[in-house]
Image 1 (cartoon, helix red, strand yellow):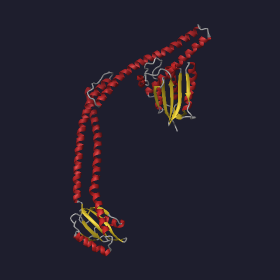
Image 2 (cartoon, helix red, strand yellow):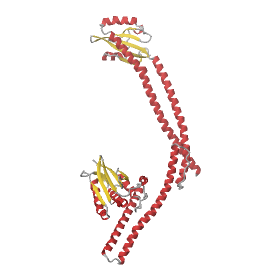
Image 3 (spheres, helix red, strand yellow):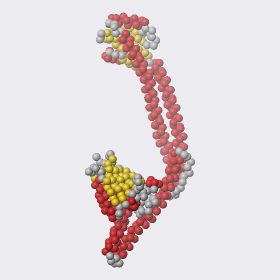
Image 4 (cartoon, rainbow, N blue to C red):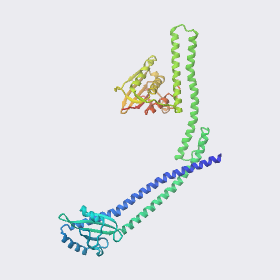
Length: 475
């Protein structure tokens, strides 16, 4: 069994190494290919396009010098220019007639020939300089040719053509490409082998961490991994150690939660049983005392019902059975119903509940009215439970852009700053002495989050605690 586990670990490690190298090296290879492609394009532009542009400009300049010649004068001047032409070794200069035949050329062998390259016809049709590169139809040599028409009084009397061999340029281009490809291969090799070494330095420590993590998964919660690195591996070690401690803490918290819930359930049940037995015995003769006892029974039963509902909601969330019945609704009307429901109840408790309305007649949202009512009632109940000593609770509804903002504030002692980041955690009760299961805010946040909203908590300026709900408005 142990051998099988080790074999599986090796297979997994090889899989990680293969994926890592494939992903990182393939990206580098793609970048290198793109870089070589971009360099190739710049070389083509530098060696070929720039040369073609220069040749076109030279052909156009020479043709411009012949613009005052008639057809016969053009032939005479062309012959004189060819005879005095001194750059035969670099460029071949040709004078063509309008039919595309070479009249005069710096290379006597081409005189009388028909080059038939595409740029000649393009130059005559566009009446501007044009270039072409390719293989000479007669010799098969790679050449670059540029032609420009000679125009006299709106009539094309001939074509001036420059031709140069591309053998030297091709040689320089190939040499440059060999150099850049060699550099690219060297970079790729360096990246590949450095990645191979790097992956090995990651995978081997991961195997050791995996083994300890398996020990923790088997139930040895709280076990700590020795931290040997201060990099991401070290961060992973810290995260697993933190997870191990939190799991142990979670088990402790759940145990405390069960004990707390048992106590919370026992308290109202004791009050209910005590008053029910007293009323049943007939010891209470005063109707006022009987009514008081019944009020206590009703209050404790309601509190017991709320606790059970919270536990059921929490159970649904934990099991993934928590669902919403979303429908179009008026958020303003739902909040007002909750406020009006609690206002009289709070008044009897000596707490003033104020409500600040927004100017909009209605605020349309998409939501579950029952779940939202549950959130409002839970938060109002919390405000009275934890901040009722302030004898006042403020509720306001506003719109901010595409959001509806609900604030519920009490004027009690607030929450210690150190406990604020933890107050929405499930089972967390902090230093509060108020009765409760510690899961109410966690359930509320889950409901608000599933409505694509946010639930924010904090201490209010001037004292007290404030809960802010932000929900998207449907337009």
